[in-house]
Amino acid sequence: MSSHVSIAIIGAGMAGLSCARVLAAGGVQVRLFDKGRGPGGRLSTRRAQTPLGELRFDHGAQFFTARSDRFRQLVRQLETGGHVARWNPRWAPGHEDGAERWTGTPGMNQVIKALSDGLNVSWSQQVSAIERRADGRLSAITATGDQLGAFDAVLVAVPAEQAGALLRPLAPTLADEADAARSAPCQAVMALFDPPVAAAFDAWRGDDPVLQLAVRETGRPGRGGPDRWVLHATADWSRAHLEEPPEVVAEGMIAAFRDLTGAPLPLWSAAHRWRYARVEAPASAGSGSPAGWNGAVRIGCCGDWRIGGRIEAAFLSGEALGQAVLAEFAPVS
Ligand SMILES: Cc1cc2nc3c(=O)[nH]c(=O)nc-3n(C[C@H](O)[C@H](O)[C@H](O)COP(=O)(O)OP(=O)(O)OC[C@H]3O[C@@H](n4cnc5c(N)ncnc54)[C@H](O)[C@@H]3O)c2cc1C
Image 1: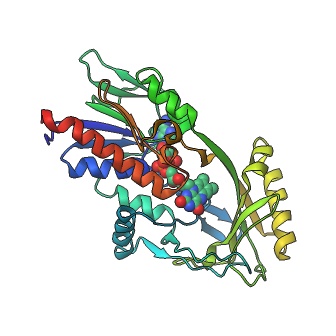
Image 2: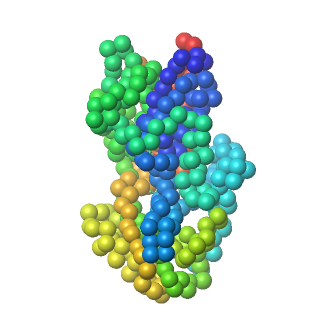
């Protein structure tokens, strides 16, 4: 493959990075642009200023499973590098299902940090449009109208609801596929307890009208410090409270957590709204393809929303797109 082929990827989450790694290994020059201030996406780790100093919370995805050979291979590499570890929490009684779970160490965003290593990623770079230049090549355009280079292809690796608008002008069929996917929101609360929560478990999930998951941050590999928890609300509760002020969200979710665990009032808490958290209806139900690629206009898309709401799905979608793009460019190299 000619190293003169130059490709931009919008979004440096698991999908964008997985795609970039396939392309880079195939000899393509890849640039990634991500609006986040640093590595994370939905595998974020928040540094919060609390009365007990700066503390870290994984407020997005808490863990992942690995089922396919390809993803298991990546997880093994990440484990060898010290970037992930098995997570065997003490589940609340009746909640253990025997699944093999993994988490980033010391935080979930370490997975994204490790995967972006060696790649050309520009953070704090929000792309608002893809345009065709007069010379036929493509450019990513920022909200302030800046052109972020000239590329042979542009790939969109952002949540479906944000992908649609980027794809629509030049690749309307891919935009239709993105619009067909649907994500559920998730309200998340980070809470610090002093005195600690007396519960004899580090993870809870179950049947509750408010909460779907509660995880003790300090019960996870590579984490220490004061007792802190991350709470995730159910999709229904999150939807019903999507536009509520964060303090109101935190109050409702902490009340539910205290009912479940007998926890004291937290010393500090904060809420974070994930507007597009987990895929409820993937696009592949309609398109049948783990990634979208239009060779005529040289625009593609990938993300968990092509397959299903899991980190592994984002990885597999990114790889599939990378391979489709390599196949397109190989004959002309
Ligand atoms: C609360 C929560 C809990 C979850 N729990 C689990 C779980 O237990 N297990 C599991 O497997 N998965 C879980 N997930 C889902 C998992 O996090 C996602 O499936 C996966 O991270 C998706 O990766 P992605 O690369 O497709 O998207 P993302 O991680 O969202 O990456 C997209 C990237 O694009 C960037 N971006 C967006 N728009 C633009 C733009 N216009 N310009 C530039 N950059 C842009 C974003 O900053 C982001 O970094 C959870 C997610 C959340 C939010």
